[in-house]
Every structure is written in C-alpha cells, then in structure tokens.
Image: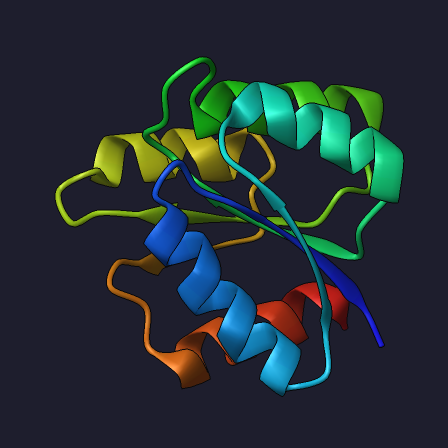
Length: 118
C-alpha cells in the first residue's frame, strides 16, 4: 500500500489524519513543519503528501516549492483553513495537486489521497 506523508504542526490533526489513513491500509509518516517535511520526504519518498499551509519554522507553501524543486513528480495536497483562498491559488500554481479544507472529513481525506496516488 502507498506511503503518505502527513504534515501539520497540530499533533491532533496529524493523529486524526494518520488514523483515517492507517485504517484504510496506508502507511503514514508524520512531520510537524515544513523543514521536517522536506527531511521526511527525502528519507521516505512517500507516494503522496497532505500538508498544512500555516506552520512555524517553514510554512507549507515554502515546503511545497522546495519539495517540488527537488522532486518534480511529488504529489502534494494542501490542507487549509477557510479564508486562505489566495494561498491555495498560489499553492496550485506551485504544483499542489489538490487541497482540503479543515476540518477534513475522513472520506474527503481518502478521496484526496486516492486521487494523488492514481
């Protein structure tokens, strides 16, 4: 089964998404900020990434650009709070394949991951 990198500075969000994904049979790697995400991406070469936009150390948009510069085929979906439409547009222009709005329903998380891994 596919490996998914879940990136969010909120531990409860990482745990919630990880639970949804592992129960569906995915292997999950977690990172708590953009810098950590880049390191974990290099380490595990995941099939897909679910990445929060607003995080300390390095935000998700910067991490998206860095990962895509190193790995142009990287499949990344951004996870956003409502009201971040401008950032979502920039993320899509920078190579994000999808985006989810928090709080994410389980079926939406699985649909996004399925689309990313297709």
